[in-house]
Image 1: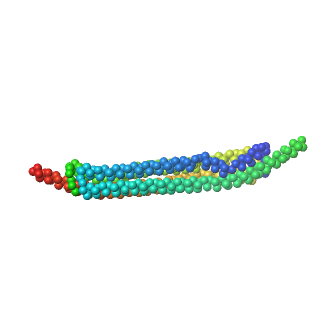
Image 2 (image 1 turned 90 degrees about the vertical axis):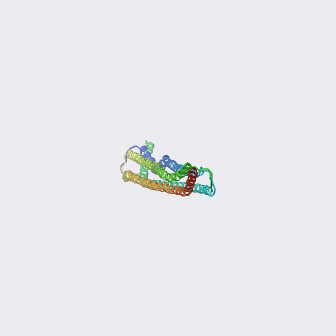
Image 3 (image 1 turned 90 degrees about the horizontal axis):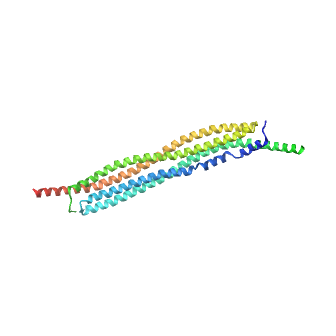
Length: 164
Length: 163
């Protein structure tokens, strides 16, 4: 093994190797704000779905009420009229059920999408950490050697200073 | 059933209501298509966030490896440990590239899966809406038909009386 440069540079190299890639990766993960951005994107997506379904349900309810009102325009009474009112109530209940089912579906979709995205993210981060572990091992070995050399050089300097 | 003041216009309007239920089904389908497109754009945004995250991490790794490699080179020393470190750096770049490429493929697959799930959800809701519209049509159709028959009868009586 041959070594050159001053021992300060070598010691700095040794210290630099201690700042491992895992630390760099952790810092990058924290800085990226992926979770917040993902949450915001999913909220925007699911809010659009919920709004659309709520609007559809509202339109449907209006349509049901309009249909009954249209039949009532002729000012009629009797069992058919009561039947129409009962039908309207039943249809409104159906619309409520449709909306409830749709909103449950949106919530389930969001939970599933969030889970899949997190799994994906964790998988990629795991792969990158594995790569870094290998690199860190190689650098740590180099750093240990570098530190030993720097310490040896410093000892030699002290000996010369003492002797001089 | 008593009927106090029906006109033919009222009956026509009632019958139009049932026809409107049919057109509502096609409106609902169009709205579903627009919603699917909007949903796909939203999913695209989710996967774009993921992909950006992966690229940010990959860049951080490359910078870390390059900075450490430069530090290593500055010490001007030789040996197996140094060679191993430099080889590890070279390997890292290749492995990070491969991981990033796989992640890009992965986001495409994830986007497809989420899009399919969203489409299924929209289709399910459309089905439910269509079922309610069908019930609406069926329920009021008979009543409107009865009204129509009754009004026709009244009109005939009017005509006969005038005659």
